Every structure is written in C-alpha cells, then in structure tokens.
Length: 255
Image 1 (tube, rainbow, N blue to C red):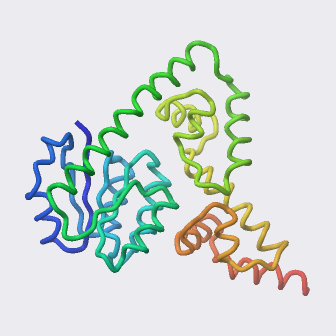
Image 2: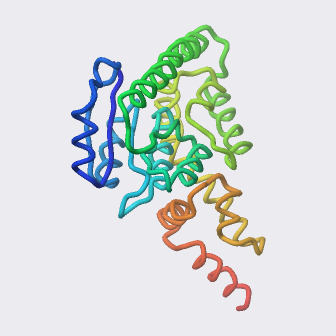
C-alpha cells in the first residue's frame, strides 16, 4: 500500500478529505495531515510520501514554492494541487515543475477514485524500472567508482538548467534511486539534491557577475521555477541575496 500525505491551512477541509473517502480501498494509507507547509516539509524530509495532496494557496508558502521544495528533496513524490476554479491557471503552472495532477474543488468521490487509480498505476510502473536499474548495476553494465561519479556530475553540468530529477540521473548511471543516493553521498560527502543546488547557485553567481540579466531571468536559466525559492537557496548557500551579491561585485570593480 502506498503512503498519502495531505497539506492545507483549513483543518475542516483536511478532516473532510481524510474522513470522506476510503483511501485504503483505493490503495493508499493516510500517513499524515498538516495544516502548515513548514511542518509538512520537516516531516517529508525524513518520511517521503508516495502521494501528496496539497492546497495550492497557503498563508506562509505558496503551493508552487511548497511543491518545488518537496520535489527538490523527493522527486518521486506525486504532488497533487487542491484548487478552486479561480486558481486553475495557477495550478496548471505547477505541471512545469513536475506536479503530477490537480483536484478541482469541490472534490467528488469519482475525482478521488480517478486520481488514486492514475497515481497507483504510475507508482506501480516504477517498480520494474527500479529492479532493472539495480540489476544493471550488479551485472556490470554501469560505470563504476570514479567513472560513475564523473558520469553523474557531467550529467548534472549538462542538464542543471532543466527540471532534473533524481530518477532521471539514477537511470543515467544504471542505479536505483536508493543505491544512487547512498553511493553519491558516500563518495561526494553531500546528498544529490544539495549538490544540484550548489551547482545551480554557482552558475547563478557567474551570471550575476558576468551579465546584466535580471534576477528572475537568472533564476529560470539555472533551473528554478520559483523566484522565491531561488532567493532562499541562494542566501542559504552564500549568506547574501542575489541583489546583494551583485552589489558586492560591482563595488569591488569600482574600487
């Protein structure tokens, strides 16, 4: 049975969603429900969900920012937006960052049944891929040791500006996601998601130094959809904002 997590700022809505549908009959166990995105992110960091249903509009963090943060850490999670009709266009933008689907309020039993069937088929289809990649790893078809790491790093360097996923790069080096994560962390001393962010921010720094592109343009060029999320990652890795970084560079040139 696959795990399900729900997130939304309206407790009544969450309670109705949790109690109105027979999730286990549809193949999902409701593992947790959260009324704020921050708590959900903390939990999902260590307990990845197979299916995540989240409200698209929350007070502290937008649905897009939340979805991108989740998918950066757990790219295999199927993220579904719960949205009102007026948010439909906004929800559709989530598809660009890898959001699986959306549910239009008010949600019906048929909507949930259809979603669960689609999600379960997608999750089921991943099993043969994981087995195939792991088998390839042990059969000698994959690069090994330093060559494997160099292949992974080269792939990141070539595709960092795209919506690169853990599944994609693991397949590239013929490993299951589980083995790739462990192997990468052991050999690089950093997990893959943090490494990808590091590469993207380093390229952003280059663009801030060497071009006059707007921060929003640089954000898109290095693989981020959400400008707010880009700002947060940039400051976490450099200690300053992109604007401050460019200001420091310009000041040093004047001196």
